[in-house]
Length: 497
Ligand SMILES: [Cu+2]
Image (cartoon, rainbow, N blue to C red; front, side, top):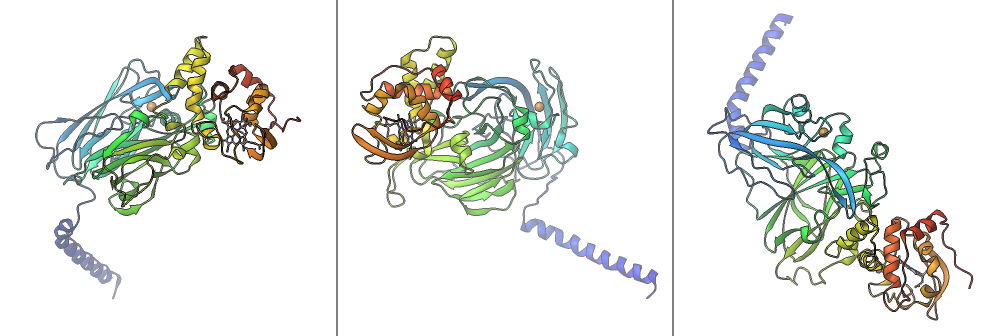
């Protein structure tokens, strides 16, 4: 065979293959929904997309044809509470962190309008991972303060996609809260469920420590080092706890759209006490079943569904667990309804998991902070704030009634040790305590770990609460006292009696 006939043969073979492919294509498309869908030009009158703030999700599109959908999204830079008594200047899509949830149908033509509020200090743009095209829209959407830009894309692939700002320095814009989710429904829609919620994780970097009060600026160095001060669901500690918890009833099916904005961390998303019946991991089309913890990459998302079966408070966490209990990555799903003792017998609320979030909220802490700033802080304010912080911080060992546990944890109630060591209390909390101590005639020889993750005002309030509870002598400890103790903190060695 010479070269020419060889090529001719190859051509014939490839033509035959193409023919087979053409014949099979309709069969294949019947068998499985298409991954990418261009269902032709948009039909009907243009539709204005319903946008929702987290944790809510717009209603299903309920459409069986491709439409032109208009999305109007405004960037707003605004100061909001990131933790109790801590403010942060967020940059937002639509006024919330994460940004407004967008819902369209595969094959829709999306006319996107990005506005940047006149009060903004920065230019912004948007990169939607659901867009096919360079930059995901970023290049066409650079928008100066007080301006608007517009671009159009066809939603070719179904799935749940992250969008984010991609203006330099990109990491800083994302770290300030500029991300959200867009759902591209499959043409037939998603199966019906009873509840849908929108939860998105992000890591935040502040100059001050975790829960250090006041307005906290962004810390670029911590961000580059990937050492977040906060790891949060929906942009604030407590965004989804207490009376803001998401809810469901026993017997209902819950669908969570879970995103991870990053900028740095990967999320090990887990709901304590629940198993996901199904997860569309990485936001893709494959379904994984019976999942305990699903990994959500930075700039990725997943759809998790499960049936609510046993009533109670379910704690949603990033199972990189220090993030949950020491950086804020904790949210609550409250399931109401009748107990089913056949599935679970136990007591309802697990205070160990909820920590100081077991209470309805930390409002008393905010009041104390505000009054401290205004110079009107009273001992009463401190006691109330301290009571909330004591839960989950000290109560695990010393118990919420201060009685301790016989032979293991000494009592704080009517403690003669406390009465005689008021000046050293801040040192004990910050530096821990070990060696033999005698409390109310009983000896303890154990170890209390240092609690120096607490801020000065937190320590002051907790100790003031302790001093004024359970028959202790009263009085107060000021933030200033704690500051002094911290400056000289060496682990507080056992005092010689
Ligand atoms: Cu931006």
